[in-house]
Image (cartoon, rainbow, N blue to C red; front, side):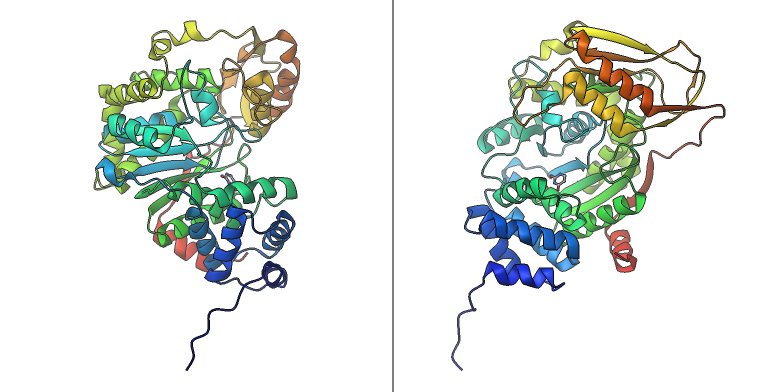
Amino acid sequence: MPVYAASPLHMIDLIRKKRDGGELDGREISFLTAGAADGSIPAEQLAAWLMAAWLQGLTLDETRALTVAMRDSGEKFSPRGLGRVAVDKHSTGGVGDKTSFLVAPLAAACGLAVPMISGRALGHTGGTLDKLEAIPGFRTALTLPEFEAVLHKCGASIVSQTPALVPADRALYALRDRTGTVESPGLICASILSKKLAAGLDALVLDVKTGSGAFLRRREDAEYLAALMVATAEAAGTRTVALLTDMGQPLGRMAGNWIELAECAELLRGERPAGSEDLRELSLQLAGWMIHLGGKAATPDTGYRLAEAALAGGSALRVFLEMVAAQGGDVSVFESPDKFHKPGATLVLESWQSGYVAKMDTTALGWAVQRLGAGREKTGEPVDPHAGIAFHARRGAKIERGQPLATLYASRAEMLAEPVALLQQAIRFTDAPPETVPLVSRVFARDDAETYLRNAVR
Ligand code: URA
C-alpha cells in the first residue's frame, strides 16, 4: 500500500472544529502552537480560535498537548549540568505574596536547585521582579548562561523570561489580554505550566490562591485549576502538587516592593515579627513540599522541619544574600532595611470604628498598593520601589477607634487620597470575632487531581 504524507492542515479548519465543540488532536495543536510562535498564523485567526477555546473549553487531552507544544515552542533551560534536583514554586498571584524570596533560598539551602522564572505586577497583584529590582543594582534580565552560573554558585536564581523562551505563550498571552480570553482554565494552565516546564524542572509546587484577593475567587474554580495543573504537569513528567491557600487578606504585613523584601529579610534572620506568622507558615509548608518532592525529605513534614532549621540556622539567609550579590544587587541595603526605605510621603490610617476586623476586599487593597506607585499604569513604566502599605491589623484582630490600621507609603502626598478611600471601603468590622479561615485548605497530589477531574462537571 502506498504511504501518503499526512494531509496539510489549515487554520480555518481548526477554528471551525473548536467552534463546533470538536477536539483538536496533537498534530493540530502542534500546528497551531508553531504558527503562533513563528508568526505564520495571522493574529485574527489565533484570536478566533482562542475565543472558540474560551467558549467551548479545552479537553484534558487538548490542555496537555497545548502545554507540551507551548513548552517546546522555543529555547529551553536545562538544569542537568547543575548536579542538583531542580524544583520550583509558582503562585497564581496575590497581595503581599512574597513567598518566592523565602522558598527559593530555603530549598537551595537544603541542597536543591531553584531556577525561578518570574513575572511583573499583573492587575492588582505585585510582581516578584519589580520587588527584586527595588534592590540597587539587582539584574533580573540574565542570559541563560548567566542564569546557570548563578544557579551553580548559589543554588537559586530568580530571573525574567527571555524573548526566546516559550514564544508561543508570548504571542497567545498578548492576544488573550486583548480579546477577553484570559480566564479559561485550560489556557491559564497551558500558559503557566509551559513557562515553568521550559525551565526543565523535576518537581513543582503550585500555590493556588482562593478568596477575595485571588484571580479566581470562587473556590470551585480554584480547585479545578489546581487539579488541572497538577494532572497536566504530572503527565508532562514533572512531579507536582498544588496547595489551595487563603488570599482573603494580604499575606504577611507588608505589601509593596522594598517593604516586602524587608519583611522577608526579618524572617530569614530568624526573627518572628507579629503579623508575619502566615507568611512564615505558608513559606515553610511550600518549601517543605519542594524539599520532599526534590527527594531531600521522606515526607513534606520532614521537609518543613528541614526548612525551619535552614531559617533558624541562617543558611537560607546566606543563600539569599549570595544570590542578590551574584545578580549584581547591593547587599548592604539589608544591613538596615528601615534606613533604606525612603518614601516621599507617609500616612498612618487610623481605624474609623471599634470592633473586630472581619472582612477584607483584598483585591481593592491590592489596587490601593498599586496606585500608591508600587505598580504601573502602562506596560514598561517604572515602579516606585518605596511605595506600599504596612498593615497593622490582621483579620480577627480587635481594634479600637483611632488605633493605627495601616501605614501608607508613596512618593508624593497627593497620591495617598485614593488608596485611603479604597482601604476605607475594603475593610469591614463586626462586633463578634469572625470565623477563622485555614491558611492551607487542601492539597492536590496526582491521584487526588485525577479523581477530582474525573468527577468534575464543567
Ligand atoms: N499567568 C500566566 O502566566 N498565564 C495566565 O494565563 C495567567 C496567569
